[in-house]
Image (cartoon, rainbow, N blue to C red):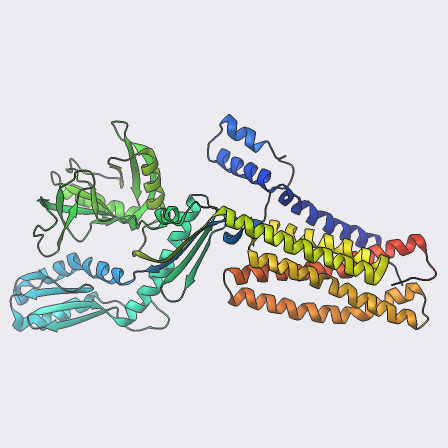
Length: 553
């Protein structure tokens, strides 16, 4: 009959209390957000009195997890970027020249002298002085080829070595280009995520779209231009040997060399070898610091491989200039005074403290493997986000009020119990979103509004079933018990199918679709819990106290 064990009652009320307790900070959103930001700043070392005061506006013993607001609610920046994967082909092929040169020099007796030729992007051309033995040169270079690292191109080679008259050509194979595209986009995706996380933005959305595009949405940031400043710089750091200086960018560099402008000295250009000795990919740390003249700088440290190459080169080239190149500009070109062991150094230049800090962040996050072309950019102002929040509030209030009135008019006291459970249900949704760190979007609000309507569906099934049982002249206790038992299968079936739909939307969809599926899925779970357990517990408690001979549903 109508009996619920004491431990079950305690557990039901405990779950409700926990959910509402976790949802409570959202009722004081601005205050709790200020507290959380201050606590994060204190953990990073900012222990000023102002931060201490902001951290104290919300008690530490209370929960402080908030429902994150999405781009359409909070305002922020939206970018759609295309990764220039073709840049990687050219960079990789050019970097092979030192190894190609060393291999062919060992065959000088057979093929004669070699000379690097100008070539198309993504191609390396080497001319030999004895073309009758060019087949030998191609055979030697084929030893550089390696298997493609890809499940779909297993067994294929990564290089295509060809012969064109008295020249040997080196290109990447189609299979290697496809594998390189995949790796490049994945690496760019991860580096963008790390750069955005470094500056402390809230709940960014960073997703791959199509073969070579990346969608970036960051709530709470000032503008799309500010977001581009964070992620748009490739921060490609290289250390390249200096061949000479030039007065213009049109100076003849010679094969295997390139002309780069100086970052600090306007009108000054350096001729450097195109193949770097060490790259930023071998950096393991970069921190803002100060040089011996107390000017802002960036200190760096290489991994063991980079440290060994850096140390060997400095030992063999004492007295020669060495260019530190950042994104195609020479930051500085110091003369090597002594062997630099240990793999650490410092980048000096005309930096401000903020610029040195940002550069350290970019270097620490890693270099983008290729450039980005921004195809679409939008800035959503916070006032537009506030309009969406206000519209969402109105929608929720109207839906809530309509459902409350309908339930009371249709089912009387039992409708009041269902309404109380509905209020608890909405609180549990926000509590769960806070606990899992979920992001609420405008479609997510639509999911909550839909949940409000669906939440009473289970109660309607139960109450209608109780009405039918009362017509068979059964007692009220038996009618209530049978009403819940016979309606249970219909409630479970209906909610399971809807939950499956929410799971599919989450798995297949992205962005706003996922926001809708999350709130819908959580709402289904909480509405089933409140309808089957909370409403029933309230009815049982009322029945135990009143013991009515008849009931009106």
